[in-house]
Length: 150
Image (cartoon, rainbow, N blue to C red; front, side, top):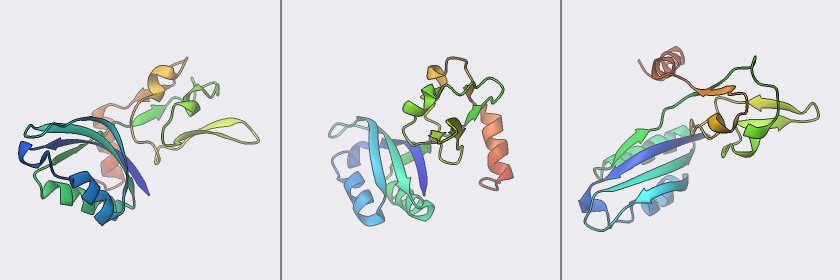
C-alpha cells in the first residue's frame, strides 16, 4: 500500500469535470485533498494525498494525465538522526500517515521511512531537530539504490 502526496495542475478545459471522483471510482484509491484552488474555466492546482496499491495509484495517475493534468510528486524524503533523537514522541502526534509511532511496551519512537510521505510536518515539531528533509541528491541516490529510477 503506497501513500504519496502529489501536486496536480489542471488545465482550464478540465476544471469543471469530476476527474477526482472518477479517479476514486475507477481505480479504487483513497484520497485526501490537502489544498485546492480550482475555479471553472481557470487553471487549477490541488495538493492530493493518494493511498492504494502501487499499480492502482500508477494507473490512476495515467488516467489523470490523459486529461492533461500534470502530477508532480512531493518527493521529499525525511531522515531521522538517531543520535539526536531522545524519544520524546512529539513527532508521533503530528504524523498523518503513522510513519512515526510509539512501539509499546518499550515506549520507543519508531520511524518507518517506507510509510513516510515526505510531508515534513515532523521537522519543525522536533525539539532537538532530529528530523530533517533529505537533500534531493540523497532522494535520487536512494531511489536509484532501490531501482525506483534509473
